[in-house]
Length: 312
Ligand code: Q46
Ligand code: ZN
Image (cartoon, rainbow, N blue to C red):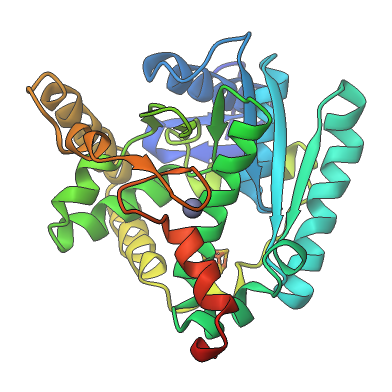
C-alpha cells in the first residue's frame, strides 16, 4: 500500500477519505483538518491566547502539539482529579510532554489539584454530595477551566473532543430528543457573556483512530487506558455502535455529524435560538461571580453540599 500523495510506503489507511498516507503526508492531512476546523468555525487567530484542556490522553496532547506546530500561542491546564494511579500516570504523561515540547517553546502548563483545592478526590466528593462521579467531575472541570481561562485572560479555551466524541454525543442527544442539548452542541461556542470563556473543539474533523495514529507516529506518549470511572458509560456504547456502522460504511460518522453542523448553520439565521434564550437568563453567581442561570452556580452549590456535615 502506497501513500496517495507522494507514492512512498504508506503508514496508515484512511477508508473514509479513500486514501492512505506516509508519516509526513499524514501529519500534513491532520494539520490541514485542524486548520480547516479553526477557519471554518472562526475559532481563533494567531494573536489569540489559547488555553488547552489536557488530560494526558491522546486527543488533548495531540491537540496541544498540533496547535504549537501550526504556530498558535497555546498554554494548557491539567486538572488532577485524584483518582489514584490513573491520575498519577496521566499527570506524568502531561508533565513529560510539557517538559519536552511546550515549556522549551515558552508555553506554560497550569495545574489544578482537586484534592487540594476542593478538599477531596473526585470520587470522595461525589459520595459527599450524593451525585454520580462523572457529573461531579463535569461540574468541577467546567468550572475550573472557565475560571482559569478568565483569570489568566485567555481568549479561548480548547478541548480535545474528536469526531467520535461528537458523533456519539449527537447520537445520544438524538436518541433521547434532547433538543436543548442539540441546540448547544457545536465545535465553537462563543463567549456568551462577561465571565464565560469562548470554547472550541478544533479536533472535530478527526477520528479517535487518526489521533491515536498521530500520537504514535509523532512519539507523543499518552495514557492509553480510559478513566476508570468511564466504564459502562453510555457514550462508549454509542461509540461502539458508530464504529460498527463506520466499518460497514466508511464515512458514516462524518456524514452524521457534519450534516448536523450544516443544518445547525442554516438554523442560526432563525430569529432566536435556544442558546440565545439561555444567554438572556444568565446572571452572576451570588457566591463566586461566575455566570449562571440560577442564583448560585452549580459548582458553589456542590461545594456547599460537600462541606455541610448533614450531607455526609
Ligand atoms: S474524567 Fe471525569 Fe470523565 Fe473520569 S470521572 Fe467521569 S467525567 S470518566 S471525561
Ligand atoms: Zn458560584
